[in-house]
Length: 607
Image 1 (cartoon, rainbow, N blue to C red):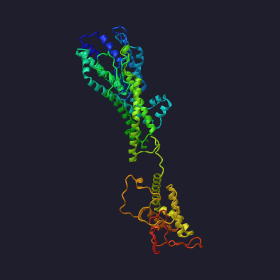
Image 2: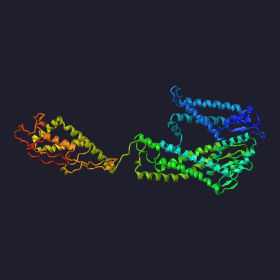
Image 3: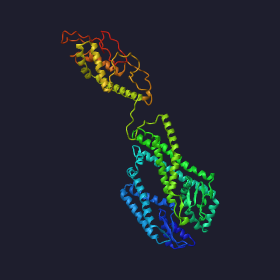
């Protein structure tokens, strides 16, 4: 429609509507990288045209991507048809697009601009298949399996760099860094182009007015210049990297020297070429562009190496895992090199598409050489980015260590928590054991406070009391209670010894953990501490007193209701002396270490 509009508005058209439609089809093929052949020359010999306008290439790539993505993705409307399978959508989009492309190539093959069929069979399927594949892959959530399948074809050292427990983080960081570096190079090239156009404004304006006098012709030249601005930005980026670009065979333009061709057609973008001669300080300042790209790429890699990516931290928090371990210096350098190679590959591809021939002999080479631009980009980004990456990584890790947020070495995403060793692990283990022992003792004491538990506990104690003195029975009971509590807490029993001196504070484990280890927020102290009336101690003492003062044939009600001292029946063995049950057994070293009660008088019954 654009070509037809320009043809209609032209006061002196050279051909009819058929010629205009053939030119439109040829330009559409040229936007896909297909090289054309121009037949209406003064000499009669066909001349190639291979400079692809990058702005025109962006439109079909975006349309192919969106078509494949929309065909595969499910619609949110309830009455919408089901989504198409991935292989069906990709095949349909690619075959349909190639059918239209083949028809356009056949239609314009008899015009003044004819496509080269070798380029048609190579470039058109490649663009269609890659753009449609990216759309299908994006609609399915960008799975890793297709990418990993392609990475298996790489050499062993590269595979070891890309694969591993945190391969996704490394590849993602390298891709983000490469995208940022490419954007800085492209933006820097655009800035250089704008500055050069301003400095050569008079020559650019003269060339624009010299090409044509009608407003339709000037509008066509303006549209052609806009379509070639991305090409000129890539040429400027290659100029800043060092290799520069060629304006004809044997005429190179780079920061150290400029040698433009003497017979160039007048065009506004070509007027921005630096003046012929050796480079000056102003030309050398173009080297700041790759330096800025290297610093940007290094900052992205250092951020990923220190584990400060917000999305990864959120995923680790949702999965209740430890944060990802910071990369070592060698792994960080490997990710930097990978990002530099990806950026160099993207720039080499853009350089290959932005240049090409515009004729034969002196016009056979226009634009930068892709391998020179790519190699220079990889070298610049690696050399500039390596010291910046290591410095930024060390600085980030220093800040994280100061805040205490660096995870232990050896932690991998998705794995178990790192094993703690040393003093902190001992404190944590002691705190957990003390907490479990306290819970078990509380539960056992609460159960022993009931009537049934008191009756069952009284029988073995009374039997032992009949055979031995009350003091020995109490000691045996204390040892048994201590062993049970130690077994329940899964910790070795405490060492035997005399009971601790009574204090007014709660019992402290042998290896008590620090308050900062046990609590995130320190608990407030109890304003009314009471050691004697502790629940565990009170329940244990009460159960021991009832067990020691209950005879074998006493009913259950006498355990609580009978206030007087019990009258003991004669024992089965007359030789055994009667046991003195009026004394309270000594406190257990495990259950009553806080306060040692005094012996009650003989006239008082246990209550």
